Image 1 (tube, rainbow, N blue to C red):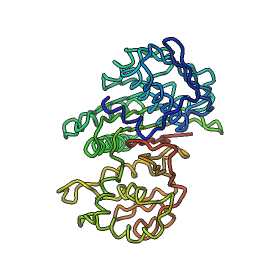
Image 2: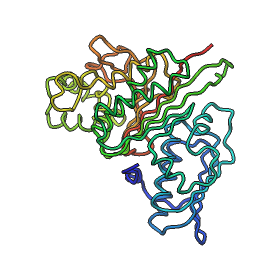
Image 3: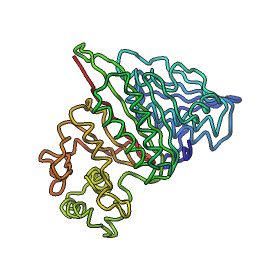
Image 4: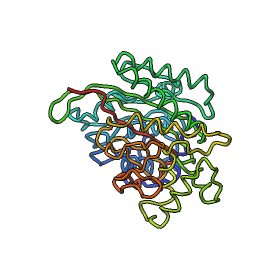
Length: 370
């Protein structure tokens, strides 16, 4: 993958928890949940180390009992790839406390690092193949600007083929395949960097011992371009095309309610999910439908707080009770589902622990149950 070094930008260096030996560096991560704070700590340590010297081995000790979600696993995999490719020859992973009692263990179990104690050049080769397809796990990496229709069609077919053995309703399988292909196309068109998509599917039991199938989708793009940043530029410069008039109307209504949690960046991200809103030139009313397709695929299937999009300092959560598309294709993420006149409910928005360079979707969906 290209452009992975960008993940270290906006990260302050730290040597807390780092120890040096002759040709080895040891990093100790104390958090019991491997989450964004853990990722931030790891990046801060690695950034400090990289400014010192190259070594043969980096050993990462983690007290984590579980990963927060699959997006966290995916970001961790990219960090390991970058470190191996540009800094050291081997990485040793020491996870002594990971528990298989929580369903999040499945994200790790179906990952690229499962049961791998030592990572070396073979791990780099596996990532750079750009395509990994197993029964429960699908990975694809598309290159920057690689967004022609033929390749999108091939990707759609590959995802459909992967989902077919899992007995997913055909109509929904088609919608999921279209959604992922659209998100990747959107990322490759607007951002500068490669895009990784991972799909995992497995059976789990709920707290009440009911069996059901979970489908998890992660789409990750590393770039200085944030979701909604181009739209933000057009709002500030008052360069709003007629197709995006609803954005201007909503902005004029929302601006007086901006605060530390809800600002123009969050507003711009939210606005990208409105049907036909686009920053592509000459779209002639056809652009801006991909993220609307995403919303349709989520309705009635989101799992707890595991569906969100994160970009820069902002996270927007897709909570089921707020997922409803109006006839005009707008979605307000509030009680009245009114995008133009009302700001989104605060429980749908969060400022991130780290400023993430790029955009990452984490979608955990319930497919079927008893």
